[in-house]
Length: 339
Image 1 (tube, rainbow, N blue to C red):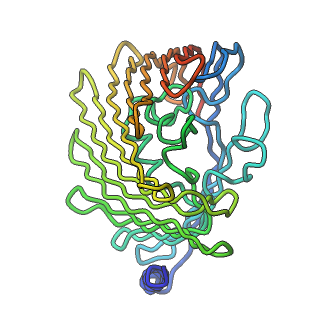
Image 2: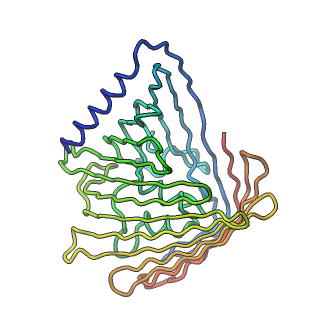
Image 3: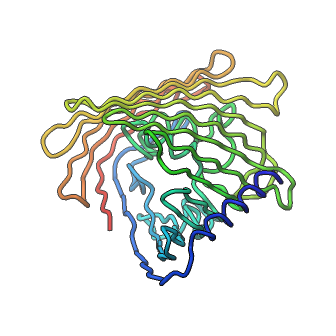
Protein backbone atom coordinates (compact mmCIF):
# COMPACT_ATOMS: atom_id res chain seq x y z
CA UNK A 1 0.00 0.00 0.00
CA UNK A 2 2.87 2.43 0.82
CA UNK A 3 4.40 1.74 -2.59
CA UNK A 4 1.03 2.23 -4.30
CA UNK A 5 0.38 5.60 -2.64
CA UNK A 6 3.96 6.68 -3.30
CA UNK A 7 3.51 5.90 -6.98
CA UNK A 8 0.15 7.68 -6.95
CA UNK A 9 1.93 10.74 -5.54
CA UNK A 10 4.51 10.56 -8.34
CA UNK A 11 1.69 10.31 -10.90
CA UNK A 12 0.04 13.38 -9.40
CA UNK A 13 3.34 15.27 -9.47
CA UNK A 14 3.90 14.30 -13.12
CA UNK A 15 0.43 15.48 -14.05
CA UNK A 16 0.98 18.77 -12.22
CA UNK A 17 4.29 19.29 -14.00
CA UNK A 18 2.44 19.30 -17.32
CA UNK A 19 0.31 22.26 -16.31
CA UNK A 20 2.77 25.06 -17.09
CA UNK A 21 1.46 28.61 -17.01
CA UNK A 22 -2.23 27.84 -17.47
CA UNK A 23 -5.18 30.07 -18.10
CA UNK A 24 -8.00 28.33 -16.20
CA UNK A 25 -11.30 27.54 -17.90
CA UNK A 26 -13.86 25.63 -15.84
CA UNK A 27 -17.26 23.99 -16.30
CA UNK A 28 -19.73 22.57 -13.79
CA UNK A 29 -22.65 20.31 -14.73
CA UNK A 30 -25.76 19.21 -12.84
CA UNK A 31 -27.08 15.81 -13.98
CA UNK A 32 -28.89 12.71 -12.80
CA UNK A 33 -31.48 10.02 -13.38
CA UNK A 34 -34.89 9.20 -11.89
CA UNK A 35 -36.26 5.64 -12.13
CA UNK A 36 -39.48 4.34 -10.59
CA UNK A 37 -41.59 1.25 -11.32
CA UNK A 38 -44.69 -0.46 -9.98
CA UNK A 39 -45.63 -4.13 -9.90
CA UNK A 40 -45.37 -7.37 -7.97
CA UNK A 41 -41.95 -8.03 -6.52
CA UNK A 42 -40.57 -11.01 -4.63
CA UNK A 43 -37.22 -12.21 -3.30
CA UNK A 44 -36.52 -15.95 -2.85
CA UNK A 45 -37.61 -17.06 0.61
CA UNK A 46 -40.05 -14.17 1.04
CA UNK A 47 -43.67 -13.44 0.15
CA UNK A 48 -44.50 -11.29 -2.85
CA UNK A 49 -45.51 -7.64 -2.46
CA UNK A 50 -47.36 -5.28 -4.78
CA UNK A 51 -45.68 -1.90 -4.47
CA UNK A 52 -43.79 1.01 -5.99
CA UNK A 53 -40.20 -0.05 -6.61
CA UNK A 54 -37.49 2.62 -6.83
CA UNK A 55 -34.73 1.91 -9.31
CA UNK A 56 -36.36 -0.82 -11.36
CA UNK A 57 -33.66 -0.52 -14.04
CA UNK A 58 -31.24 1.99 -12.52
CA UNK A 59 -30.81 3.31 -8.99
CA UNK A 60 -31.89 6.97 -9.04
CA UNK A 61 -29.09 9.48 -8.49
CA UNK A 62 -28.07 13.09 -8.96
CA UNK A 63 -24.70 14.72 -9.13
CA UNK A 64 -22.40 17.62 -9.82
CA UNK A 65 -19.22 17.29 -11.82
CA UNK A 66 -16.73 19.83 -12.99
CA UNK A 67 -13.58 20.26 -15.03
CA UNK A 68 -11.02 23.04 -15.11
CA UNK A 69 -8.54 23.38 -17.95
CA UNK A 70 -5.11 23.91 -16.40
CA UNK A 71 -3.29 24.10 -19.71
CA UNK A 72 -0.80 21.78 -21.33
CA UNK A 73 -3.46 19.08 -21.72
CA UNK A 74 -3.99 18.86 -17.94
CA UNK A 75 -7.37 19.31 -16.24
CA UNK A 76 -8.64 19.30 -12.67
CA UNK A 77 -11.77 17.16 -12.25
CA UNK A 78 -14.29 16.53 -9.49
CA UNK A 79 -17.62 14.79 -8.93
CA UNK A 80 -20.10 14.57 -6.07
CA UNK A 81 -22.96 12.10 -6.69
CA UNK A 82 -25.69 10.85 -4.39
CA UNK A 83 -28.40 8.19 -4.61
CA UNK A 84 -32.05 8.76 -3.70
CA UNK A 85 -35.30 6.78 -3.54
CA UNK A 86 -37.86 8.19 -5.97
CA UNK A 87 -40.86 6.61 -4.21
CA UNK A 88 -40.25 8.40 -0.89
CA UNK A 89 -37.75 11.13 -1.73
CA UNK A 90 -35.31 9.81 0.86
CA UNK A 91 -31.61 10.26 0.15
CA UNK A 92 -29.35 7.26 -0.26
CA UNK A 93 -30.09 3.66 -1.22
CA UNK A 94 -31.09 2.73 2.33
CA UNK A 95 -31.26 4.26 5.81
CA UNK A 96 -27.82 5.38 6.91
CA UNK A 97 -26.35 5.53 3.39
CA UNK A 98 -23.83 8.35 2.85
CA UNK A 99 -25.18 11.48 1.15
CA UNK A 100 -22.68 11.24 -1.72
CA UNK A 101 -22.43 7.43 -1.74
CA UNK A 102 -22.19 7.06 -5.53
CA UNK A 103 -19.00 9.07 -6.07
CA UNK A 104 -17.17 11.89 -4.31
CA UNK A 105 -13.71 12.59 -5.69
CA UNK A 106 -11.27 15.21 -6.91
CA UNK A 107 -8.36 14.59 -9.24
CA UNK A 108 -6.23 15.43 -12.24
CA UNK A 109 -6.68 14.22 -15.81
CA UNK A 110 -4.35 14.22 -18.80
CA UNK A 111 -5.03 12.79 -22.25
CA UNK A 112 -1.47 11.45 -22.42
CA UNK A 113 -0.91 10.35 -18.80
CA UNK A 114 -4.37 9.23 -17.65
CA UNK A 115 -6.54 10.23 -14.69
CA UNK A 116 -6.02 10.08 -10.92
CA UNK A 117 -9.09 10.41 -8.64
CA UNK A 118 -8.92 10.74 -4.83
CA UNK A 119 -11.94 10.14 -2.56
CA UNK A 120 -14.88 7.79 -2.95
CA UNK A 121 -14.82 5.90 -6.26
CA UNK A 122 -17.15 3.34 -7.83
CA UNK A 123 -15.39 -0.03 -7.88
CA UNK A 124 -14.01 -1.58 -11.06
CA UNK A 125 -15.93 -4.79 -10.33
CA UNK A 126 -19.26 -2.99 -10.12
CA UNK A 127 -18.62 -1.13 -13.39
CA UNK A 128 -17.67 -4.33 -15.24
CA UNK A 129 -20.69 -6.17 -13.80
CA UNK A 130 -23.22 -3.58 -15.02
CA UNK A 131 -21.58 -2.86 -18.39
CA UNK A 132 -21.34 -6.47 -19.51
CA UNK A 133 -24.96 -7.54 -19.02
CA UNK A 134 -28.09 -6.51 -20.92
CA UNK A 135 -30.02 -5.30 -17.83
CA UNK A 136 -27.23 -2.93 -16.73
CA UNK A 137 -27.24 -1.96 -13.05
CA UNK A 138 -30.75 -3.24 -12.25
CA UNK A 139 -30.78 -4.71 -8.73
CA UNK A 140 -34.41 -5.65 -9.46
CA UNK A 141 -34.10 -7.61 -12.72
CA UNK A 142 -30.41 -8.21 -13.60
CA UNK A 143 -29.41 -11.79 -12.66
CA UNK A 144 -25.69 -11.05 -12.48
CA UNK A 145 -26.10 -7.91 -10.34
CA UNK A 146 -28.38 -9.77 -7.92
CA UNK A 147 -26.02 -12.75 -7.67
CA UNK A 148 -22.83 -10.72 -7.18
CA UNK A 149 -24.03 -7.89 -4.94
CA UNK A 150 -27.15 -8.99 -3.05
CA UNK A 151 -26.91 -11.10 0.16
CA UNK A 152 -27.97 -14.73 -0.06
CA UNK A 153 -28.97 -17.40 2.46
CA UNK A 154 -25.39 -18.64 2.80
CA UNK A 155 -23.23 -15.56 2.27
CA UNK A 156 -22.98 -12.55 0.04
CA UNK A 157 -20.68 -13.71 -2.81
CA UNK A 158 -18.79 -10.39 -2.78
CA UNK A 159 -18.18 -8.42 0.44
CA UNK A 160 -17.84 -4.65 0.49
CA UNK A 161 -19.83 -1.91 -1.23
CA UNK A 162 -20.08 -0.87 -4.89
CA UNK A 163 -18.07 2.25 -3.99
CA UNK A 164 -14.89 2.56 -1.91
CA UNK A 165 -14.18 5.55 0.33
CA UNK A 166 -10.64 6.74 1.15
CA UNK A 167 -9.54 5.42 -2.23
CA UNK A 168 -7.21 6.27 -5.10
CA UNK A 169 -8.25 5.38 -8.66
CA UNK A 170 -5.86 5.57 -11.61
CA UNK A 171 -7.13 5.07 -15.17
CA UNK A 172 -4.65 4.93 -18.04
CA UNK A 173 -5.15 6.47 -21.49
CA UNK A 174 -6.52 4.14 -24.16
CA UNK A 175 -3.71 2.55 -26.17
CA UNK A 176 -4.35 0.15 -29.04
CA UNK A 177 -7.82 -0.60 -27.70
CA UNK A 178 -6.53 -1.33 -24.17
CA UNK A 179 -7.17 0.69 -21.01
CA UNK A 180 -5.98 -0.27 -17.51
CA UNK A 181 -7.27 0.80 -14.08
CA UNK A 182 -6.02 0.36 -10.51
CA UNK A 183 -8.08 1.12 -7.38
CA UNK A 184 -6.97 0.96 -3.75
CA UNK A 185 -8.72 1.93 -0.51
CA UNK A 186 -6.55 2.68 2.51
CA UNK A 187 -7.00 0.77 5.75
CA UNK A 188 -6.85 3.92 7.87
CA UNK A 189 -8.52 3.37 11.31
CA UNK A 190 -9.17 -0.37 10.96
CA UNK A 191 -5.91 -1.28 9.26
CA UNK A 192 -7.45 -3.32 6.43
CA UNK A 193 -7.29 -2.34 2.78
CA UNK A 194 -9.12 -3.07 -0.45
CA UNK A 195 -7.39 -3.36 -3.83
CA UNK A 196 -8.59 -3.89 -7.38
CA UNK A 197 -7.20 -3.89 -10.93
CA UNK A 198 -8.87 -4.09 -14.31
CA UNK A 199 -8.03 -4.26 -18.01
CA UNK A 200 -10.48 -3.28 -20.77
CA UNK A 201 -10.25 -3.94 -24.51
CA UNK A 202 -12.54 -2.15 -26.99
CA UNK A 203 -12.24 -2.40 -30.76
CA UNK A 204 -15.18 -1.97 -33.15
CA UNK A 205 -18.21 -3.96 -32.04
CA UNK A 206 -16.24 -6.10 -29.57
CA UNK A 207 -15.46 -5.28 -25.95
CA UNK A 208 -13.96 -7.35 -23.12
CA UNK A 209 -12.84 -6.87 -19.53
CA UNK A 210 -10.88 -8.67 -16.82
CA UNK A 211 -11.14 -7.49 -13.19
CA UNK A 212 -9.54 -8.59 -9.92
CA UNK A 213 -10.72 -7.42 -6.48
CA UNK A 214 -9.62 -8.17 -2.91
CA UNK A 215 -11.85 -6.86 -0.10
CA UNK A 216 -10.91 -6.82 3.60
CA UNK A 217 -13.06 -3.98 4.97
CA UNK A 218 -16.59 -2.69 4.47
CA UNK A 219 -16.11 0.91 3.43
CA UNK A 220 -19.60 1.93 4.54
CA UNK A 221 -18.92 0.92 8.18
CA UNK A 222 -15.09 0.88 8.20
CA UNK A 223 -15.25 -2.56 9.80
CA UNK A 224 -13.39 -5.72 8.89
CA UNK A 225 -15.45 -8.16 6.82
CA UNK A 226 -14.83 -11.55 5.24
CA UNK A 227 -11.78 -11.39 2.98
CA UNK A 228 -13.17 -12.15 -0.49
CA UNK A 229 -11.07 -12.34 -3.64
CA UNK A 230 -12.95 -11.99 -6.88
CA UNK A 231 -12.09 -12.53 -10.53
CA UNK A 232 -14.47 -11.50 -13.30
CA UNK A 233 -14.29 -11.86 -17.08
CA UNK A 234 -16.80 -10.18 -19.36
CA UNK A 235 -17.33 -9.74 -23.08
CA UNK A 236 -19.88 -8.31 -25.47
CA UNK A 237 -20.30 -8.19 -29.25
CA UNK A 238 -22.82 -6.15 -31.22
CA UNK A 239 -24.01 -8.05 -34.30
CA UNK A 240 -26.46 -5.28 -35.20
CA UNK A 241 -29.52 -7.52 -35.04
CA UNK A 242 -28.56 -8.54 -31.49
CA UNK A 243 -25.99 -7.51 -28.90
CA UNK A 244 -24.80 -10.46 -26.82
CA UNK A 245 -23.14 -10.38 -23.38
CA UNK A 246 -21.31 -13.00 -21.32
CA UNK A 247 -19.79 -12.92 -17.84
CA UNK A 248 -18.04 -15.34 -15.52
CA UNK A 249 -17.21 -14.48 -11.90
CA UNK A 250 -15.38 -16.49 -9.25
CA UNK A 251 -15.43 -15.44 -5.59
CA UNK A 252 -13.15 -17.00 -2.97
CA UNK A 253 -13.96 -16.43 0.70
CA UNK A 254 -10.58 -16.61 2.43
CA UNK A 255 -12.07 -15.99 5.89
CA UNK A 256 -13.84 -19.36 5.91
CA UNK A 257 -12.08 -22.68 6.46
CA UNK A 258 -11.17 -24.26 3.15
CA UNK A 259 -11.58 -20.94 1.29
CA UNK A 260 -14.82 -21.97 -0.47
CA UNK A 261 -15.39 -20.63 -3.96
CA UNK A 262 -18.62 -19.52 -5.61
CA UNK A 263 -18.90 -19.41 -9.39
CA UNK A 264 -21.33 -17.15 -11.22
CA UNK A 265 -22.12 -17.31 -14.94
CA UNK A 266 -24.41 -15.01 -16.89
CA UNK A 267 -25.45 -14.74 -20.54
CA UNK A 268 -27.76 -12.03 -21.86
CA UNK A 269 -28.86 -10.27 -25.02
CA UNK A 270 -30.37 -6.98 -26.20
CA UNK A 271 -32.40 -7.24 -29.42
CA UNK A 272 -33.43 -3.99 -31.19
CA UNK A 273 -37.19 -3.89 -31.82
CA UNK A 274 -39.02 -0.77 -32.96
CA UNK A 275 -37.90 2.21 -30.91
CA UNK A 276 -36.65 -0.01 -28.12
CA UNK A 277 -35.02 -3.34 -27.38
CA UNK A 278 -35.95 -6.73 -25.99
CA UNK A 279 -33.81 -7.77 -23.02
CA UNK A 280 -33.18 -11.36 -21.95
CA UNK A 281 -30.76 -12.73 -19.33
CA UNK A 282 -29.98 -15.99 -17.54
CA UNK A 283 -27.70 -16.24 -14.51
CA UNK A 284 -26.43 -19.26 -12.55
CA UNK A 285 -24.81 -19.02 -9.12
CA UNK A 286 -22.94 -22.21 -8.15
CA UNK A 287 -22.29 -22.05 -4.42
CA UNK A 288 -20.03 -24.47 -2.54
CA UNK A 289 -22.20 -27.55 -2.09
CA UNK A 290 -25.46 -28.03 -3.97
CA UNK A 291 -27.59 -24.97 -3.19
CA UNK A 292 -27.55 -23.15 -6.54
CA UNK A 293 -29.46 -20.07 -7.62
CA UNK A 294 -30.91 -19.78 -11.14
CA UNK A 295 -32.38 -16.52 -12.39
CA UNK A 296 -34.08 -15.69 -15.70
CA UNK A 297 -35.28 -12.23 -16.72
CA UNK A 298 -37.13 -10.92 -19.77
CA UNK A 299 -38.11 -7.35 -20.58
CA UNK A 300 -38.73 -4.64 -23.17
CA UNK A 301 -37.28 -1.13 -22.93
CA UNK A 302 -38.95 1.50 -25.16
CA UNK A 303 -37.39 4.94 -25.69
CA UNK A 304 -39.80 7.88 -25.90
CA UNK A 305 -36.80 10.17 -26.43
CA UNK A 306 -33.04 10.14 -25.90
CA UNK A 307 -33.57 10.90 -22.22
CA UNK A 308 -36.82 9.11 -21.36
CA UNK A 309 -37.73 5.43 -21.65
CA UNK A 310 -40.49 3.16 -20.35
CA UNK A 311 -39.99 -0.52 -19.62
CA UNK A 312 -41.72 -3.73 -18.64
CA UNK A 313 -39.84 -6.68 -17.17
CA UNK A 314 -40.39 -10.03 -15.45
CA UNK A 315 -38.08 -12.32 -13.51
CA UNK A 316 -38.06 -15.88 -12.18
CA UNK A 317 -35.50 -16.35 -9.40
CA UNK A 318 -35.04 -19.88 -8.01
CA UNK A 319 -32.79 -20.23 -4.95
CA UNK A 320 -32.29 -23.80 -3.70
CA UNK A 321 -30.89 -22.48 -0.41
CA UNK A 322 -34.32 -21.22 0.66
CA UNK A 323 -36.63 -23.46 2.67
CA UNK A 324 -39.85 -21.69 1.56
CA UNK A 325 -40.81 -19.64 -1.49
CA UNK A 326 -37.88 -21.23 -3.29
CA UNK A 327 -38.89 -19.67 -6.62
CA UNK A 328 -39.63 -15.95 -6.58
CA UNK A 329 -41.53 -14.29 -9.41
CA UNK A 330 -41.45 -10.55 -10.04
CA UNK A 331 -42.83 -8.26 -12.74
CA UNK A 332 -43.23 -4.54 -13.12
CA UNK A 333 -43.57 -1.54 -15.41
CA UNK A 334 -41.57 1.62 -14.98
CA UNK A 335 -40.27 4.90 -16.39
CA UNK A 336 -36.74 6.25 -16.38
CA UNK A 337 -35.68 9.85 -17.10
CA UNK A 338 -32.17 11.31 -17.42
CA UNK A 339 -31.40 14.97 -16.91
